[in-house]
Length: 233
Image (cartoon, one colour):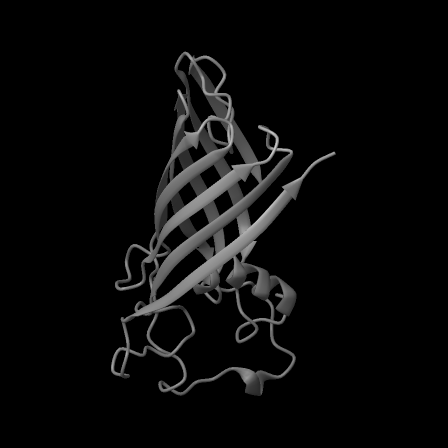
């Protein structure tokens, strides 16, 4: 993978990843652009080739890229833009990306050990699927309602893994509370709640299309609660 990132500090030195715990007296802001090129990534599933290990496929799925499996050997071009600002206990952070997913080759040249593992029935293998590109963004706003002690933050994000498929968006709405016991990030308690919806629509390579099955395209809903204690020494 090849990456490059350009950062411009508009005002001050805002820093990333945390709220305005210092209760900045002057505005702090920065904007950045990033690009990554990841060539020849083999996402062929074991249906077509034995060269992709199961552990790799699991990592891909956990990163919400499972739809790419079986699609071929990809060249990825990812463009990213982010912005952060802090002032008087307020913090604002936003980031968006667009990933160009080019199929270099749909056949790795490898052959399965057992040719009988390749399904040929139309009931098992759907028509060729074009996923297109992927994009996503999020926005987060936070405020220290008690300076250097209690912060409230709200976050919203959306992800589209394949622009040529429909009813497959992942959306997240989250709320978090952070309490610092010593006025720093070294000793604090964090509580957060996320409401996540995942669209069950869309097709994927080497997978049977499920449009006619009950529930296709409906959102899968997850409500996630998390409690975290952070201590540095």
